[in-house]
Image (tube, rainbow, N blue to C red):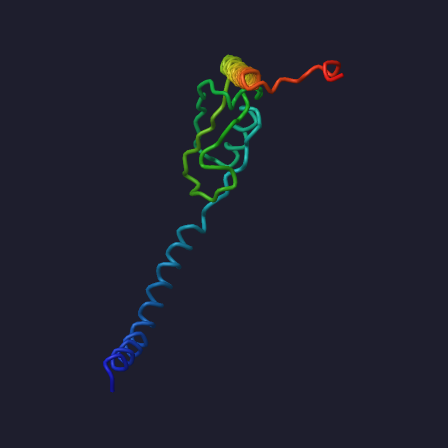
Length: 165
């Protein structure tokens, strides 16, 4: 018998002996996790609700929560003030009933600052686009001028139709 055949047979015997033990351990772990998670509840998705409505919903589920005001950012421009922008853990996630929930919102001042940031960003984009267009125009004008100069030096300019007669 070759070395590989001996190793193969030993591996089969060892696997057969270890498989029931491994299955028992895996079953125990899975059962522990299922027992641990049987009391879990899903976090309601309160995104886009007013702060008052979101608070009522979370209190019905008896979650502890905190309201967290976000800083002004472009992504919050044109959102409604005092509405839920984000929730952690995310809505729909299954969590322990004692999980602490953070509700992120923006007040009117933050929304206005975000709108200003958004307008500034858009103005910068327009300025960049105009500069790019001016650079392209300048390049094409320069290219035309060089082509005209070269053709003039080589005597390749268009002749007058009347001069051929």
